[in-house]
Amino acid sequence: MITARWTGSSLRAKLLASYLLIIALGVATTFLITELVAPSFFEIHMAEMMGSAGTPSMDAMMRAGQSTTESLRTAYITSVTQAVLVAAAVSSLFAVVASLFISGRIAGPLRRVVAATRRIAAGNYAERVGIAANGDDIGGGEGRRDEIGQLAHSFNEMASSLEATERRRVDLLGDVAHELRTPISTLEGYLEGLLDGLVEPSQETWARLHSEASRLHRLVDDLQELSRAEARQLSLKQEVVDPKQIAEVALRRMERPFEERGLSLRAKLPAGLPPVLADRDRVVQVLNNLLTNALRYTPPPGAVTLSIERIPGPGGMEEQLLFRVADTGVGIAPEHLPHLFERFFRVDKSRSRAAGGSGIGLTISKALVEAMGGRIWAESAGVGNGSAFSFTLPVARGMSEAGVARYHV
Ligand code: ADP
Image (cartoon, rainbow, N blue to C red; front, side):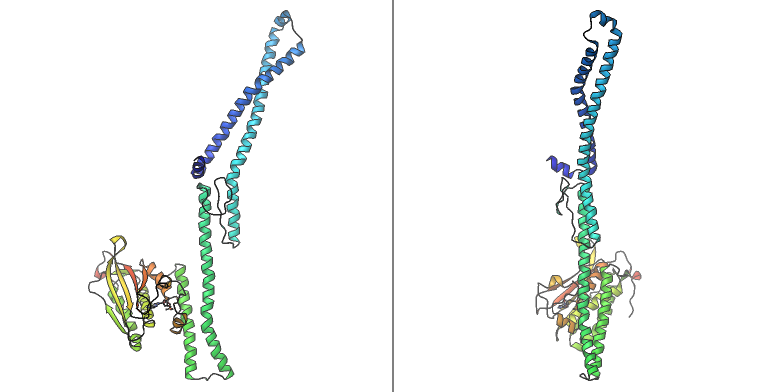
C-alpha cells in the first residue's frame, strides 16, 4: 500500500517527504546522541577536575568556591559542545547516506533515459526504458507513475513512433524499388531486343515502349502525391461546392472509357442536395480513382453506379453527404477488405499492373478524404459479387446557393 502510494505520488511530494525525513532524522539523532553522550562527557570532565585537585577539604572547597563554579561551568559547556559535535557528525552521516539513496533513485533512471536517447539517436529505434518503483531498470512496460515514470512513458511513445516512421520509410523504399523494377525491366528488354535486332522496330513496339514509359510517369506522379499525403502536406482549397456538379464532372470524364469497354455508367443524384465543404479538384480526383477502379475490375456487360445521399454525421449531429461508387464487378474477398487502403496493396498484382494500376490510388484517396474531414471505406459481398466504395464529406452549414463555387470543365 505504502509502495503503491510512493510509486504513484508526484516527484515533488516525494522530494519534500525525503527532505522532511532527513531533517527529522538529523533532529532525532542529535537529540538522542546528546542525551546519551553528554552525561558521560560531563562525568569524565568532573573526574578530571577531581583528579587534578585531589580530594579537597571542605575548607579548601569553600575557598575554592568561586573557581569550582567556574570549572563546573566549563566542564558542562565542554561536554555539551562535544556531545553536539558527535551528534552532528552522526546525523550528517545519516543525511549523506539518505541523500545518496534518494538522489540515486532520481539520477539513476534519468541517466538511463539519457543513455537510451543516445542509442535512439544512433539509430537503435527498438530502444525502450522501464523504471520500477525503486528506480531499477525493468526494460520497458508499466513502471513507476511519477514524473520520472511519465518521462519514461513519453520516451517510449516517442521511440515507438520513430520506429514506426523508420519502418514505413524502409518499406516505402523497398516497395518503390519493387514497383519501378517491372516497367524498367520491360523497357530494358525491349531496348535490348531492338539493339540486337531480335525485336521489330514496329508501330506496336513503339506503342509498347510508350505505354511502359507512361506507366513509369504515372507511378512517379502517384508516389509524389503519396509522399505529400503521408507527410500531411497535401494542399487543399476548401470551398463550399455543389456535390451534384462535382459528380457530373467526374461522370463526364469517364463516359468514353466506360462506353469503349461496354459498361454502363449510371448516376443517382437526387435534387436539393446541400453544398459540401471540400476541395472540388480533390473530390473529382477521388471519384476519378473510384470510377477508374470500378472500370478496371468490372467485366462487361456490367454496370457502375455513382450515387449521393444525405446521412446523419457521427453522433447524429452534423449532416454529411455520402458518395458511393458501386459496381457489379469481380468483388473483394472479406480478408482483403481491411487492406485495400494500404499503399501498394493489390488483390491481384499482375492483373492490376496489366490494367495500369499502381496500388496507391486508394491510399491517396483515403488521405484526401480524411484531409477534407470525411471517411472512406469499402464493402463487398465477396468474390464475384461486386463492390462498393463510399466516402463522406461534411455538409457546409449556413451557406447560401450564391456562395457555392461553380465548377467549369
Ligand atoms: P490499383 O492502382 O492497383 O487499382 P488501388 O489502390 O486503386 O490500386 O486499389 C488497390 C486494390 O484494391 C486493387 O489492386 C484491387 O485489387 C482492389 N480494388 C480496388 N477497387 C476495386 C473494385 N472496384 N473491385 C474490386 N477490387 C478493387
